[in-house]
Amino acid sequence: MKTLYPEIEPFDSGMLKVSDIHEIYWERVGNPDGIPVVFLHGGPGGGLIPMYRQFFDPEAFHVVLFDQRGSGRSTPHAELRENTTWDLINDIEALREKFGIDKWYVFGGSWGSTLSLAYGINHPDRCLGLILRGIFLTRKKELQWFYQYGASEIFPDFWERYRDEIPEEERDDFMTAYHKRLTSDDEAVRLSAARAWSTWEGATSKLFPDQELVDHWEGEHEALSLARIECHYFMNGSFFPDDNYLLNNVDKIRDIPTVIVQGRYDVVCPMTSAWELHRALPEAEFIVVADAGHSVSEKGITSALVDAMDRFRTAGL
Figure 1 (tube, rainbow, N blue to C red):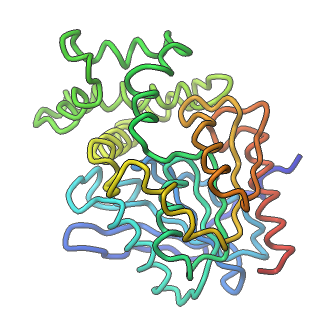
Figure 2: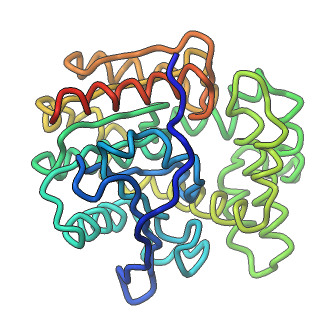
């Protein structure tokens, strides 16, 4: 079983102004003359953590990581204006051009898999390969499962906090009720809703719940960006033209080498979506991790992702 590469610090970092409102934080690790990779974090709104740098052989890869609009160290924090999937795709292209990269591997999990697929569909000529984990197609049935009814039956104990944030008379549509609170003018209302939303995701992300992960999403900075931006995207259908946009456009990425890594017991992004992508894109390598949930830090998922990148390195693509 493979493990992460040693901790590593960026050799370069900075801010890039991408609109009149937004500046995004970026960093680069590894070998500046190596094989290019862009890392797309989850959420939307999740932001970077140092561990994300460690999936790649630092001697072989030149890895570009960035905090998506409103996330992490990007500014303004938790901003919803000018924050759409298409804006993020434009930001990826702006970074590629900034660093003079012709083509790169696109590595993303959860919402990062959504964004990777959308980027690949719109810029297939810029992709050396796609490495996707915890497939999330942002369809209504997926959102209903996690935010309205379904996952609640598996984690009823953690569900109570998420449920109880909303009065009974509004519980027929949790997402709308949360959106109302997450966009409230009252700072205390926003933060309380953000923490309830974000810790629900943190509590259910691993096969064995991890209190440290829950505590991470209790943080004001982390909770506000994750909850506000996720809810904003999901209320707007992730800004796709239709509910099945990604599966309907897989022909555009059929020739891109792709690896799909999915935890069998992923409750946040259930395996159904990964299976449907596998069926629509049988050319992709499909890896099911038998003893994992959703989190990238679970041992089997980490091993599969590191191994995929090592194999791409060996192929010399």
